[in-house]
Length: 419
Ligand code: SF4
Ligand code: SF4
Image (cartoon, rainbow, N blue to C red; front, side):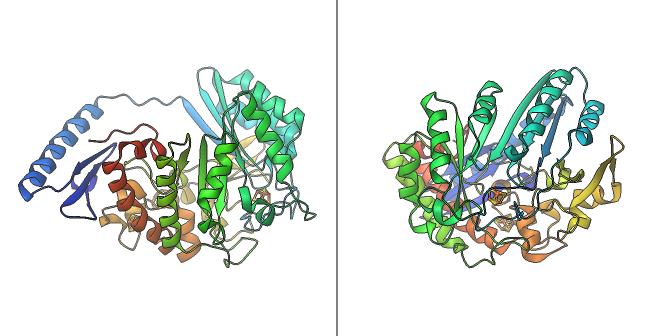
């Protein structure tokens, strides 16, 4: 049971957070006796929750699948990790439709996420055909798209009509510098035009903004612009160069500076009572889960019909493809390579070399992005120093802010349960 309890020391005298799956409990200015009694209460509660869990039946009726419709892209982003647009292969409908049919049954929910690789809507025909086809096969289909936001009116209408959950990459005041069209022209006005149309009819849009070392000092200005656009959810991500990035890392922010800037932007939002939620990517609901589904076999289909567990490794020529790519769609069926799947399963962060197993931040950090770990240290995986520095600066600081101000929690946690 001890593996499910973490005690995090917070700054100040005798301040602690006791973290268990789904729960954060505070002892502020707690004497030794008060702390011991709090810890023992948490242990009892955890045991009760575990016993209750054993009787809950697991449902197996959801299929979740990522699709990279194309490697083509009309932008040339500075930090692109997939060389989007450098090659232009498209996924073919026939290559995936039969596979979907074999996977589907009337009662299942299908979650289809279209991602890059490239800009998904440059292969709009495949996206719309596949969604129409999937809707005929599955009882329910939920669609998500991560897009660069340069699509035309036809695509925009399709998004609204199909209630697509959409995330647009938009770098605000740094957009022109970081995300130009391939010919060097600005893509900003086109994206803003689309965002404004969505927000005028209150269609939910989340924005993804990459923070470079230039952006780290201007996060409040970025927040001001997003709030003026009526955006309610932003995912901030620090740029992080990889072996397949377009640039070599000279624009990555210092991780500690980044974490401090993130903390002060959360405070900025709370002080002004702004209607904006931040997905930090580094502060998740406490649980025993891994950071993402990579080790448990994320399924992402590439334009070549390969099946990979991470979008960052999508070509058979990419580094680590011999580990991350674990299958292929062939003759309308998927062949999965079991030895690679079991190798991936072993990549749980608690097996990771470098301290995650005993780290007191592990239930919130979840070992960080496994691919960031691999890009930095290779295999076997070992924690990424970039991620780890951010977590150590961010988590204790944010936990203390949440304890001191209840309005902070709703900015970073979806459904806070805090005591
Ligand atoms: S980051 Fe996305 S939008 Fe930018 S070049 Fe790469 S694939 Fe295209
Ligand atoms: S990456 Fe660092 S902060 Fe995260 S669990 Fe591992 S040791 Fe802890």
